[in-house]
Image (cartoon, rainbow, N blue to C red; front, side):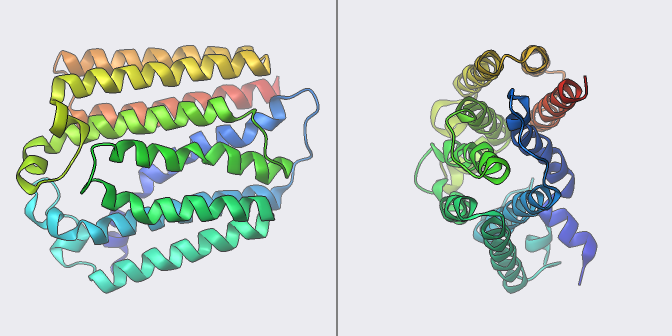
Length: 283
């Protein structure tokens, strides 16, 4: 088994930083006046569920896109096109991780189990949406939209509208960042008949759409902080808005690449939210 190839396939670094957004959503219940009891088992299972869902999505995406990745100069060195991992091994891993996701979700409680059915189906089908619609970015965002609800259900044992705005913030930022990421492959997508917002509307309009979505993400965080009465979350939202603005400014000036903007926005925003929410809980 090629461990290095598997690590490249699963993008472990991005997964770890993605956990900061999920962790922030899971901490929202503790910002209420009546905080729930801390259950280590629920947190471990929630972490396992997120990681396995993301790993499954990465494997399914690599499997379905293997022929395109082999033709794209930017992706032809990935493990599957290079033959470091076989298609059978890739899809086997995808199914295995998905099974772990379902098992972990149902082990938390039945609500998380039911939510996992919607998330799991979206994880499998997302990779196919770029073949039929430029709304594929929003299909990816919708997977993450459910994450705060799943986290709330895991901690509180109930469904609540409270994390809705946090879910919207995550939905908007993931969709927007995916649009920025897609700007790298406009010419290739046009040649292959694939769909994306940059491919259909052009890079300039795509970046405007992405900027509007990131603005909506920041506004959602501000509203979430107001509803929870959290000044720490409000400060975090302001810092996240600054990161969004700074990265777009650097991108427009040509000082960073699309990939760099994508990575910095995703990593920094999640880290800022998690750190400030932890600080509020501590102080």
